[in-house]
Length: 255
Image (cartoon, rainbow, N blue to C red):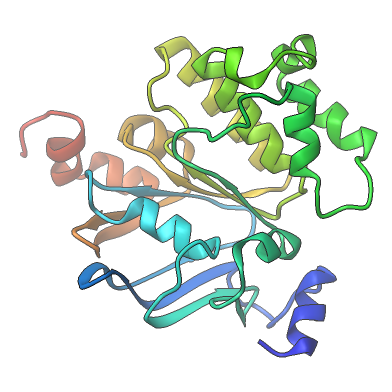
């Protein structure tokens, strides 16, 4: 990417007019000789929640890791606001407005809640109290436990912390990888309500989720991956009512 493009993107300029916020084109990603993503393409428009569904090994996590620069495609393009970002290192992409909440939370266990949140704001010269206030308003439990080591939190609290840490970087695009994994149903409902609130506040969301009912109930649109390829895509309501989706993910027989 050119210096001009970097400056334009970092400054928050709109980039290419009318371009999707995120676009993947013919993206192929390999683990050694194994092709994990087989030329997939998808778009995420500004302000949307887009769900990425699929079974284990379908390529969902690989897609998010490629968008956030943790993996590099062997072929294809990753575009943010119409500008290519594939090839840019992961820690630098935070400055371009991408926040990534990985599968398994990955909080810093021996650091306090507050220290974890401060780590999320590393791209700024100092921590903004307004950003902390926003996170503590979304997640009051974190405010109560701000001095507690992250490793002693419950699974639901660690998920809240992982999301809060990503929000401290003020992302325009938030990548969420299986936020409901291993959580009790009541906590899952709370997490999804907060994701909706984050989106209502202006953050675009690309959501990887095994819980198809929850994900499609929240999302505007969805993509279904099968063995590294896009098998289906469309408005969330249409996917949720599709007999193939219901058979594959909701345990119902196909009509």
